[in-house]
Length: 436
Image 1 (cartoon, rainbow, N blue to C red):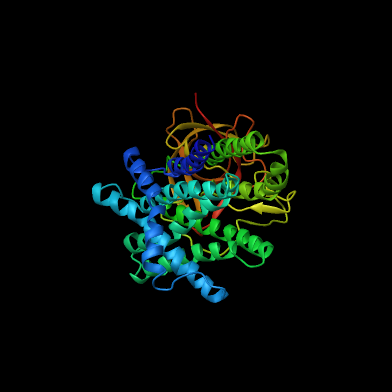
Image 2 (cartoon, rainbow, N blue to C red):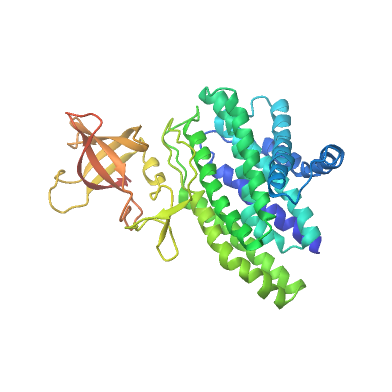
């Protein structure tokens, strides 16, 4: 019974993130067969570690050491580099069998992450059988996502080389970065002073969340299949991740209460839940927040996925009673994108005539990018016959109340400055409502 439970929970953890990629892959979905093959091959990859360790690394004297410097080097090159290279094997196999499977930047990251999730599934089973199923709680929140983060960094140089025209050295640069991230993470888990190691490990985990989401966002923005009608529904992604993670945690706690004892729950699980629940919250919120701006590539920065904001907005996600704000777009752009090329009603919010004298019909004709944000071009009809019209520029509202009770988006209505085309003149706030 315990073995079946470990397999089921391990699979649900990995499946949660496999399906996450289906939700965020906007423009060109992968075939389920390719995903299944990659995942199954990924499950087998942890078992390649043993012969590599026994017949290559140990005979060469590549092992852990009491010396912190040598220990770190071991984790970077003897663990990180080896494991990340092995995770690439399923991707190579799929690319060899299905040459057209990878045809956009996001595909490289997606396939290696699915391979990493297969790897994590197999590794979770091995760890749970060796140390007990309680390790699955911590691994589900930290280790499984971390495997994706390392693999994403590891392969990003290849993406930049192939699609951005970066020099070949960028491939090796990110191979080293991915291996180093993996090695540092494992090194901190094995830190001599446990409490310090745990704290540093969590802080490091937060740093690589930001790197991971930046790479995903860059790859989505640069898809050759881009269409302005599609954006990621942030709320849908968050709800999905919560809908899977909460039952997983409940199942682990329930199994422990049935087959272990109450002391184990009180001494092991509750302390874990108290501090890992906040980590899970940051993780889910941050990996759901994207800014879909065509061709926009942001630099990867070492930053935490949260920051101090003196005046938090209503739509922000907060930590520690509002002291910290989780990074990312605060407004779900999906509400505007679904209205693209649809007949809409543009309704002024103010009862006084600020700019528009009344509600007008219109249509969103195009989407452009400017200063790392999306701007929608609105064709506003000034008469009922639609023979007279004027163009405006719409921007999403990122602070305060961003939508009505009917969930219609509130946006800023702007005109182009005739003296400076790079500047917008704000006219007023309006509500966009689809015509019935």
